[in-house]
Length: 112
Image (cartoon, rainbow, N blue to C red; front, side):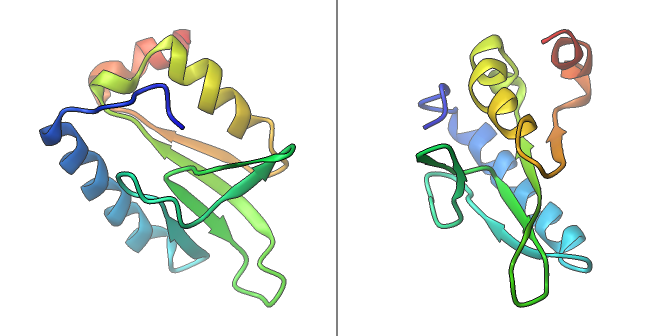
């Protein structure tokens, strides 16, 4: 579960809209599963626990090999708790990790 327990409604709607836009963008190359809002339908196993990144990019071939994970953050969720929890976990997978943040939060995200 994300350290951001409750995102403001307006930000949650924007967050989920960006997830769906990225799903459309990535589905040309990957089989894309999404976890918008509180949905937990596409897990990635890290150690003994399942994690739920915003987008899970998998091979279109039969094996469904993990090819990447994507996290979308809002102004509220670019913080040290997210960085230490989710960003660190997903960046340690053997697949690329893509992080999308608002342009106003780029410097903060780089610092974290």
